[in-house]
Length: 413
Image 1 (cartoon, one colour):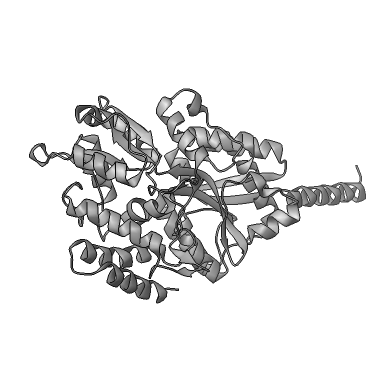
Image 2 (cartoon, rainbow, N blue to C red):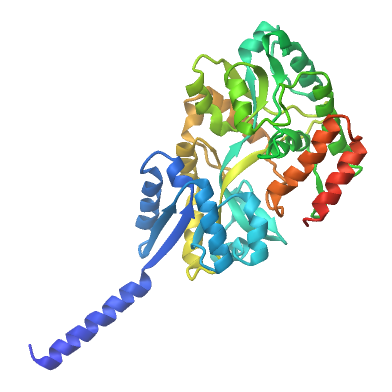
């Protein structure tokens, strides 16, 4: 082989290598999901995606929730966010304001994607920035042994039934109460999961035209007055103002409360902690005169694409893969969660009656969490919590509660 020919061969090799490298794209995917799933399961899904999309590989950047949040926040501030990111709905507003997230509406349009199978989309300004991939809904957990001992035949379906059952179950002498309500300022998500959830279960809203709508809102007033009635009647477990969500679970696991609004993600935890606990799952009771579908509070593993990503089209392919009926079913099955695709069905629905009951509640209602997408959502919960505690203690009227909370909220909008 002469020198000229060897040079030509070398040049061709470099060109071919350059073409191959140009066609290969590595997507960084930052999320907290992999550590919370059975070992190897999420990587296996990524391997399937890579097999279906030659030339695209996925590098998982995995860590605990808090660590991942810090990394994504830092990436948003510096323009170095991973191509694809796991999102909590409470982060979305701030990221969109920073210009850190790409419009998924635009990416769906470019790809000709039909979004009719998506259970929910988190939008700001008319554009979608997050899609819930799997959902951890918050139904009501009911201690069936306590119900039977009290002579109650079935879990309550309306607010008046709930109040009556809570009163029947309450036995302070034996440290048993009808309901549990966590309102800790340290972890104020009780306002979302245990207070406003009653509003959404009856089709109500705390917002109007993208702004807080608390003052004079009859639906909000009926909810807070209902909870105040339960508090005054002494049917809520003691320690309301300092109780956190983990404390609530502890009360239920140990049989000290009859009813609890709780995440479906806790189902196996409750079983592990107390295998003898006989409990059921039902929808959150609605206002007595409400006949429509019930909003179901939820938390999600959301997904978004970084605005700084140089591979947004390829990133969308990964989102589309995870939201497809087949693979959304697989992911929701291994996560013990409900799918973000309305045509997907997790495997556990066929084998576990409690999950099946919860899935029935999920299918008959709709996902509802108005804090998702709001600015500084956790702080909004805390600001409401401050006023709500004063109201429960009798230091504020209902009108003062809502006026003070709305004024505080508006300062954050």
